[in-house]
View 1: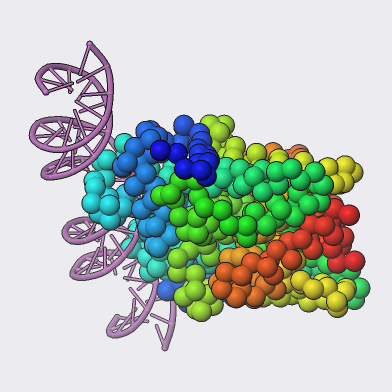
View 2: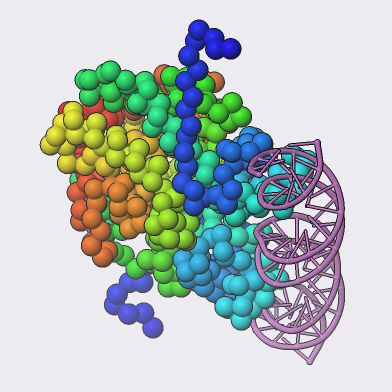
Length: 229
Length: 229
DNA sequence: AAGAAATGATAGTTTTACTATAATAAATGG
DNA sequence: CCATTTATTATAGTAAAACTATCATTTCTT
């Protein structure tokens, strides 16, 4: 019954305030996530509606509303899931790596998704979700209800990831005066510069040659280590 | 008729693709801008509608639609106006300053709006517009139609400002490898860290004590000059 | 196989995002 | 300063978005 290769089952947990019914637990829920990712990537979050998703899925609006209160909750769910997964991958990729400088290098590679790792949930398309986070991620918390949602823990995954990176920075240089700022800026900058390279190239020195992230990797390393040292 | 103090009249010009009728030319147009800023600041761009604005103004939806195609165009208009104004203020504040290092310091102060200067348009509330740019600014270009709107020149003010800063950076250190990236990151970081300090303090080392920007100023200077030198 | 729970089908409400048209008010140019 | 163009308002209407409600039908549990 069991193969010789151990099946490592990872479940990314998302704050239960974000959904009405846990989408990871049911077939329909997974379909909402899977096709939701596809549709948001395709038409953007502002054009995305539950009706369109229902049509695409051959399901109904009402069914989707039983999982998520509205499309904003779905977006925050996806973004949360993504950042939790990044955090897991950093641990995974930097396992047994003691040198904090090497840990940080691995962290950067992980943030920009250079070290590929299949999603622990087959129905979640890694690349599409990454696109969504780059393009729509900040809309999760640039909203009027930010304080209320922050209290409800909507942004803990992102904050936890920031804290993890800040700790690595401090391990490299305990006297660095702005670890949290550098950490959050690293995350924001990675996404922004990627977005600029594709859409507003005047705003970046990056040249995006089809999915090749090596230049971005180099640039982020330059910025981060120049600052820390 | 003329006072002894010269009235310096500055007109911030905005790409005419952004409006149907120039709001700066008419009474109603100015009212749309003025009250639009107030309302967007108050309820956020997602809750903002032209109907609500019309009610607030005691005007009608149809009238507002004669000035702007939709609320997105209004947002881009406001953001464009803001960045053009920042650019003007940098020139104004750094007039006759030759040392590029001092120019950059003045630029940073200008970006975070530390050197106060009354708006050249009395009906535009400097602080409210700044709030809007910090909170909603990135939504101007994180949209599906980004490439089309970029072609139509919607983002030239922001790109021009980035270019101006990049040039100052190069004047300080002609060998700096990422001037455009550092420039755009400076702009994004200033706004982000300000936003984090207020709403997601775990993501920043900044402590915002009521409108005091000195800490942010110090931080940005640290980052920028550490990188350039 | 019965009962509970989830999903689907259908329909309805309010709000948003517009467009159209006629009436009134304001500006302007001769 | 009157006539005409132009801007604004009032009113109304449409299609889609953002939900909520109800009941029938599957599917899942035990």
